[in-house]
Amino acid sequence: MNGVKEREVQEYKYRSDRNYSSHSNGKNSKNKLVIAILAVIAIVIAIVLLKQFLGKPTFKLNGEETVEIEYGTEYKDAGATAKAKFSDISDKITVESNVDTSKIGTYTVTYKVPNNNGEDTYTRTVIVKDTQAPVVTLTGEENVEIDFGKEYEEEGFSVKDGYDGEIPNDKVAREERKTENGNIEIHYIVSDSSSNKADKVRYIKVVDKTAPEIKLNGKAFVSLKTNEEFKDEGATAIDKKDGDLTSRITKEGNVDTSKDGKYTITYKVKDNNDNEATAQRTVFVGETQATGVIYLTFDDGPSANTTPRILDTLKEKGVNGTFFILNYSDANEHLVKRTLEEGNAIGMHGYTHDYKVLYASVDACYQNFKKLQEKIEKTTGKKMMIARFPGGASNTVSRKYCQGVVSETSKKLLADGIKYFDWNVASGDSGDVHTADAVYNNVTKGIKPGRNNIVLMHDFSGNNKTAEALPRIIDWGLANGYRFEVITPDTEMITQKIQN
Image (cartoon, rainbow, N blue to C red):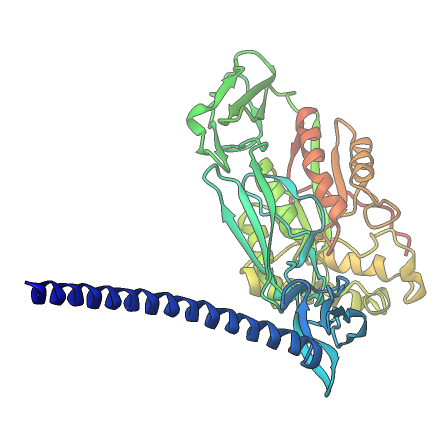
């Protein structure tokens, strides 16, 4: 019994000793871990403090490490900071920079920080860029109105870039774009050397302010005998935008051929924008219906620029004229043919207009007409039998070269059946008259009723004043009852007194 208790006591003691030993060992392990951690922290702090005291300084850039800046602007460096041995040594930093904002490129800013063994080097990258597009400056207005059917005439433009300077116009792409409403946008597109693109726009508003063109069928001046039937040939109308408007023409006025008098028929037409055009036909009925006769004559042609304008006007107005022409080039031969084809008359003014040459002798003057007569016949197949002396039959300049040359030559021409004609109305367009108004005034004041009026004008090159005055002269003649005719070999000669 005692032996059993003794064993139990010993077992209990053994277990108690074992538990104590286990608890003691766990506690010691935790303590060792804490001590180890604290030791590591102490070592790190010691290293940091040692580096601060003995190692290289710390460095920090202010701002970005890479900076982009616009060309031409001022570059201001943001700077940097540095610390060593627990103190701020930012003021010890030296800065070197090659940044040039006047030139596009990549630059470097260098920062040098002193340390125990010399210096540490750090950098910042600065990129100078051009991001501004060129500036396109338009000559004239940016917003323009043009009439329908007309083309916009470029007024010009210029281009300047902040970096590239003046950019030539041939580097600009000019594009015309039509909008849905029929207007036009002109784009001036250009890029600089940095690929910055500019697109300047000129806005063209297309408007219709032009009246239709109304033309009479047949002549604008009609002469009828009493009770003779009048047939109205009507008119046609064409509008640049709306096309053929002939069906819209309205007519006012009528002609009663049983009663002598002057009648006017007015033709009117409007386009879709209410632009109105009018034309008139004048009808004279009776034996005394006309005030007189007007012969429109033109000297010194044909010319490539003036003669076509005059022929166009005569055709449009339904009247004809007489052209006393000079020698002509092959290029103008078609104008000689056209003159006759459209019902006009041609006379000889001379192979040359050089007084010294043509008035050198009677034979020279005579041949001056005959040579041109032969050339015209070769061109047209018709022999012209009317003429006009250069300077007129009454000229005195010929006295300098040959006495009696005009008198004798005129006899030779008449003997050949060639009539010569001067004039009794002078436009002055080859002298001191310089405007269309002056030509118009001279002609209309010089025309007299009850006679044959031969009007002297010229179709030499560049004679715009006569070309511009002619439509008004014709309108005035028609409105005042004059009849327009051409000179023929049967026309009664009107000449001035021969002075040589």
